Image 1: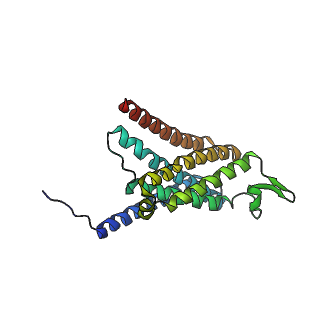
Image 2: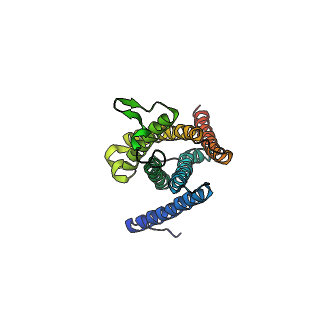
Image 3: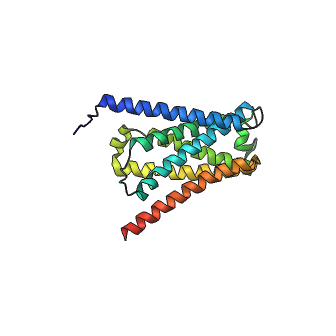
Amino acid sequence: MNTTLITPSNYWVQRAKRHCVLALCAVAMAWATYLAVPGSDTRHKLSMGTAYSGLVLLVVCLSIGPWKVLRGRPIPVSFDFRRDIGIWAGVLAVVHTAIGLTVHLRGRMWMYFFRDLHPLKIQNTEFGLANYLGLAAALLFVGLLAISNDFALRSFKSKKWKSLQRWTYAAAVLTVVHGILFQSVESRKAPWLIAFWLLVVATLGLQAAGFFFIRKKGR
């Protein structure tokens, strides 16, 4: 029987290849979205491109676990394929935040979060809430990116690392609510709403199916 010896060199070559593929997929999805967004506002189109491509990768990342559960496959605390997809979802989320903060109110970025500075007044509108939730999600993604490596896994140990990694769900919820609010703020057209909700409902469906499968199996 032939066996393939996985050396450290081969391991990193495989990881590098996967990251190249994921990067190309991310760019392709962002570019396709960019082209589909009407208008000539480059920053708005880039914001939409990174938002929807990031959401797709986040959905894939969150769906891998339930899919394995439903197929009766074991799920390790961490495995590279899911982690690498999550890394690119996080990268796109951070890039989207950076671009998104330049789309509206150009030259007055502080107005994303404050209605006035003297005296200080919080941007307590639907637009403001969407921005606060988006910023919170981005900060969580930055933290998740920081622990998405073997060094963090060894340092925190499996149980602690997994508890930190579960903040992915909080980041996902904040991302979805942020998206819902911006669908309203920008009066998005039906195709964008349909695409958004299909991704959200598909993820929720898989997560629920995985949860009830585990619960039923544990009885």
